[in-house]
Length: 195
Length: 234
Image 1 (spheres, rainbow over the protein chains, first blue to last red):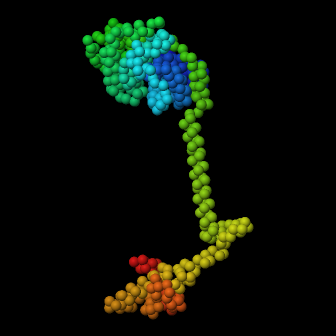
Image 2: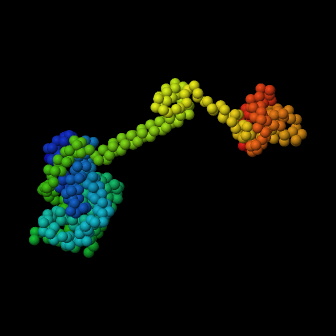
Image 3: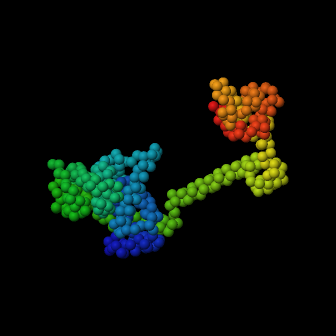
């Protein structure tokens, strides 16, 4: 049983976490953190872990006021994460001395930092990066929220503040764009092999 | 070959992981593979920051890490209230001081205030001499009337010239006796701009106009000051 699969158990888990129960907090964290980091890595490469930590702390502040089931909790978590990523992007744009984001120049995964490629052998992370490199931000955001965060179309619409119809259009376009750009389907997989 | 655009339902199924690689629409096999990989292995990742993050989250959940905005809001609120209270106190103090200095406070307050301030060498009017000096200046009957200036002088002059004009036009002078001063009074009223008139006459006229008991109430202006002001400004 995952923390989000049983409504009653999940409510009890959230209630315990709101009171600072460490076991409950660890359970919630471990159930959601990998997807959270994966999602943030797609939006803000290199800052995902830090932003995920900030997201968890923000969530902790509002945990006592949370009402809802596991899916509501997940939606809240990714809403906070997305806002954190947006805030980070704004701050980075304001800072003149901020180093240039290499990912912005690499485009496809083939142009990534060699050191990072050598260290990162996770095909899953590479797949996320590939998606974000190939798609415009709104489309990548929607597809990652669907695939990585596991949210429904309706939940994604609430997270990004759009109508379900608009999100449906975004995801359809995103998929079409991905299909058009992926000439060799297994290329990203070959690149992820250890060197 | 460019892949066709998917319908919404198929796209939704593809994103939900309900479409296997073999069942993927034409041109979307690579996409299905990519999406499957992106959502795979999410439970296997560890986090180097897990301990620190959970500790901070625990503190936040317990309120040990109060929201910065809430703390700042509380601090700002107390500052604003302090400033407001100080401003109100300053205004009240200033108004009270001014009232005390002019002797305008009620007798019950003016008297102790006067006594206390007198002990520290500050002299303000007491309740008994409240208004001393004001009666003489109010209405310009004492100090300024002799110079033929002030609102009453203007009023009196205006009324008299109006009456003269009224009489010149052939009307009966007594028809408006209740409004206009008596003719004998007007003969001695100088122009208010003529400061150097006959002082004794001016004084007499002024006193006659405003306070003379010889003028019957019916023939005096009901309220020389108020009516005179309106005429004098006209």
